[in-house]
Image (cartoon, rainbow, N blue to C red; front, side, top):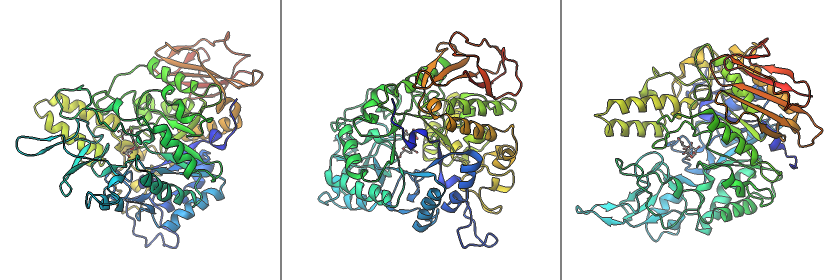
Length: 589
Ligand code: TEU
């Protein structure tokens, strides 16, 4: 049986601070304040009422708010002990923590310690000379060889996540440093004890001491490297650098590092939560050891199989066809991770790294998008584990259309990949077109477009005369908080009702047993939830993932009593017919 914890029963909400809301800081007059077009701490503070009362979430996770040159929008931290001045001051940040707690809500920050920005003082020192005491905080290697023109050749053939080799040549000291992501994100050398201690001190304790309730832990499975850095198998002979997929992640000392981090830097702070980002596909089973309560490592993980269902194996941004049974297999596996009470899991469809879920998992066609948004709400909020809603998901925001100019994409990954595609496939317009469509589906930019508060100028995200750092998604004029707040038929109202129901029945929805009834069906997902106690409540969830009307037969042999319809995406629909993208929740006893 699961031990009860606040973070198991909470509904989390992810905030991407640059794109959430800009509100004049305390003491500034709204009439004279010069809006910057980027979100700030005050914007989050002024939205806490919305989050608590109009949506009903209990905890927020704020993506990186630290000092950063923003080559990867804050996932490249140049100083762990300061905030990004665009968002406000450290005092404003402290006030955010206080205001969140004053409402009885929890707040977690992002912990990005697989790498730091090359602007960080530690890296600047490290690159200053081979004998610098900080040198070994990072991973340096000599060239494998020099080519016939005397140029260095990197130690292996791995591709970095955002293009090029994972090895960047440092002219000054004539060695390469490792960066799994952008070349300005240097990987830490976790083998170095002093480096780990410095991270615990500056990046972890500094913030726990300020009172936050835990961390979302970026790319946690990458800390331990396979130090021999073997070449990756050549899966795509037409490109220079190969994806190191199975060679990064889950290195030999990973469990040891995570245990040490948790016990040395995170104990003594009460019941904090640690949500690791698994960053590699590969399912729940392999990662159990990281979330076993007995082992005292992490509280839970973001697994990637569902998030990457539509990601191409050659590149995540080439769309990949997928099927419902494939998706359901991951759902079943993720729910099963929690069997027995020792491990816990997350449930999410969106974050700042993928396109919008309505577009990707259901339908953003005008006649289906509202139903789709609600359908996915039922998917998200009736499974066990901790659900995470990404800002705007509660409105059913859809991806920006193909007509959103490619020049307005701002993300490093999108920009680098698009440049590389155009260079590499200049004589192959079909591939360039496929890449363009891939970006429309899964560029990180879609989730990073500003939050849609109103249908007015700049969607109420910033001042009417400011220019938002990232251009608005044109759908804001019809899909926004203001339009949905008072509308009982809106996606937002549906979320709000469902959150209430979930919170009223934690035994059923947070801790309950999960049984998928139609694993092989490629049109619907139908599951039953039971409490851990045999005598408890039972719920039935029915989701139609097609744009067609489907015949529906109540699975009476599987249910306890006479199922009563509690919520549906379609008011007053026929019991025996599922409308396109209809979702239903029944209580059975
Ligand atoms: O993402 C880690 C990760 O696994 C990436 O491959 C991610 O899936 C990628 O963006 C796919 O398009 C984390 C953060 O969530 C991401 O925003 C950062 O860019 C990355 O780490 C580096 O810190």
